[in-house]
Image 1: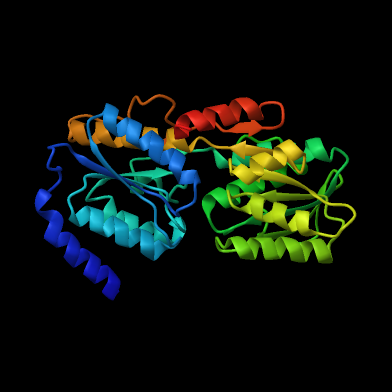
Image 2: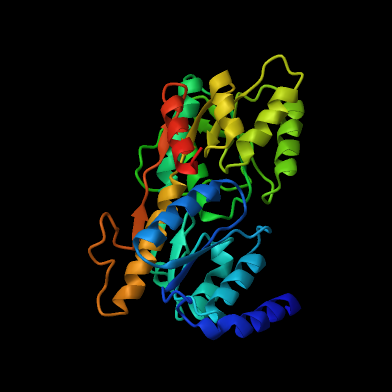
Length: 344
C-alpha cells in the first residue's frame, strides 16, 4: 500500500503535462503482464501504430508478474493523464472490479492477449482465440501419437482464461470433440484421466510463472511417470524449461514436446525433432491493433463509435488475431519474419 501511495504521489508531481505530451500528441500506453521476450514483438507493433496514428506511446513491462505490480503502473499512468491504455491483465477474474470501478471510467481500456470476464468493462479484446489455438496444439499431439498416449500439460496458472481455453482445446481434440468454441471444462486437478481414443491426461502442472519450478515439475514427472509420451507447454517459457528437463533425463525413451510461442530454444527443438511443433500467436499484431484502436477512440472523443464497424469484431467486442502452426516445414520462413520484425 505504501509503495502504491509513493508512486501516486510521484505521478501527481509530473501530471502537469496532462493528457497530452510536450509534443502535443495524445498519450497512450501498453502494459504487459510480465517482462518475457514475447512482449518485445508487441512493443514493435505498438511503436509502429503510434507513429502511424500520431500518438505518444509508453510500453510498460512489469518485472514482477503480479496483479499489484500491474495496477501500480496503471494507477500512475491514469494520474499522469494517459487517455488510453491497453493491458494484458494478470488474474483478470480477480482484478475485474479494479478495471470496472477504477480504470474503465477514466481511460479508454483495451484488453490484449488475456480478456476480462465481463466484456462491458473494456472497449474490446485483441488477441488469439485461445480455445482454437489449444485445439491446434491438440492436433500436434495427435500427429505425433495417432494411436494415443500419456499426455501432461504445463502452464503458469490454470486460473488464467487463456490457460483454461488452451488446455481445454487440447483435451477436446484428444477426446474427439468437434467444437469451434469452448463448452464444458475439465477440472484443473484431474489426474490419470481417460480422455478416450487411447489418450490419458496424466496431470496439469502449474508453476506460478516460475521457470525453475516448471523445469522441476517436468524432471519430477520424468522420474515418476517415465512412460509419458507428450508434454504440452501452454506459455512461452514452459517448453524450453520442459526441454531442458527432457534433455537432462536418463530415461531411454524421452517424450516429445508440443509448444506455444516462439522462444528461440523452442524453435531449436523443432529443428532437432524434440519439439513436434509450436503454436505461435501474433503479439506484433496485438500491439499494433491495440494502439491503433486506442488512437482512433481518443481522437473520436466520443463523437462516434469507432469500433462499431471495425473489421472482424465480434458481438462481444473481440478482435481475434490468427495463430499459426510452426513445424520443420515452415520454420525457415517464420524465423525470417521474426528477424525482420526485430530488425536483425
